Amino acid sequence: MTDTAAMLRAALARPGASSSDFDLNPDTALPAGRVLRPAGVLVPVALAGGQPRLILTKRSSALKHHPGQIAFPGGKQDEGDADVVAAALREAREEIGLPEGMAEVLGHMPDHETVTGFRVTPVVAVIRDAFVPVPEPGEVAEVFTVPLAHVTDPANYIVESRYWAGQRRFYFTVPFGPYYIWGATARMLRALAARMRP
Image (tube, rainbow, N blue to C red):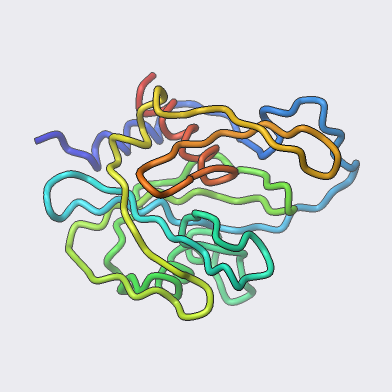
């Protein structure tokens, strides 16, 4: 059986550039002097049960920001967080009930700038033991998994577009079954896919 952790470590060691929500929209004029808020998201790969699977969340439809969207567990770095890795792990405990100490952090990818003004650090980790996710009430509607092989295959990505604020915006999607994975989550996964298959 392939050592998934070793493959991910090798992928993270390869050189790569930062990404942003604007990568497919090079004509976007970003405000000069903008200040990005630090945030961390966990890219958790569950190894128990054979086929490695990526754990994702579906945000509650009642949320003000990004309702119903697919996302990694994570969020902004709080004052009590030592760094963005600590923020990602704390948010994973809160959002999906990931027990403390269960995530084996392998490293992180270059930062991703979001349209909402965050500098997001994707923190890649493996979860070797099985656990039962507990969605955070009011914020997470569902916790689900997709095969890691699906999101690390560049052939599964599609570039789509929609009009937003009067402009046509292009973005990556990587659909899986009933789940429409798009936007920042899909862009960060596309960056991981590029590193996994150099």
